[in-house]
Length: 165
Image (cartoon, rainbow, N blue to C red; front, side):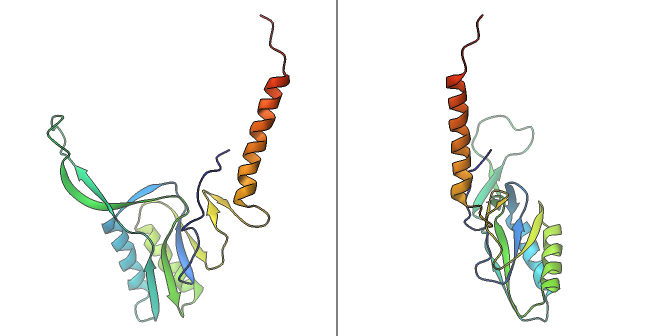
């Protein structure tokens, strides 16, 4: 039972609506992020809104050509990218927008970027990995459940007599 992870960056902070990554870790290029941003702006043209980008493409990707012998360095710079973990908010919207309009804009943007995404609102529960916190589930209870399961396994192994061979 995996219990690691963080709730940081999984909730809407500045805006009213957000676009959250549902897939497991993805590498998204700066071009793909910009394309998603432009798609949202194009859909909401003429409306009063503020778009927040919560992800920055800060990892340089270097490539070497095919059929190049080993060695001779790292390769040439190709593009900027960002590694986005599961359940991370990518875009946030703030303004006098109807929820259906914001949902449609995020749906169009998610279709142009790699991975699957979900629409979230301000006040939605944070996530640890893919587990929603709230309704009695806390990060502490998730970790305690694993610890008690490990203790029970070790106690069971200690009380089981060795098999005669």
